[in-house]
Image (cartoon, rainbow, N blue to C red; front, side):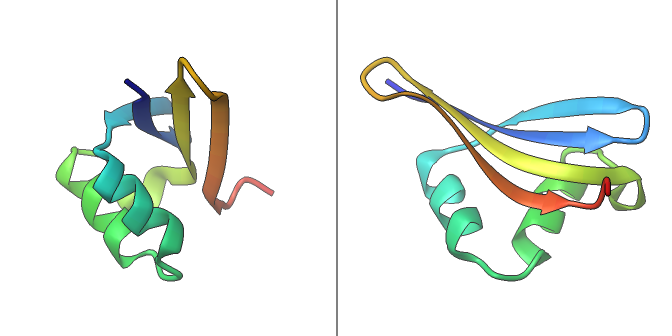
Length: 74
């Protein structure tokens, strides 16, 4: 079974939030930050401290993949 996580980079480190496959699909398709912001804030991460967000999937059959959702670091 695949492990799916939302990795949120902050100005003071990063936070890893476990995701369901359904939420990962919603975040990949959604072209706004509303759902992403909702998940991040509901997990105690201050939105104004976020500099990047990415979905990391580790699947025994398909390897490792990263989907960038937000990049404010540049």
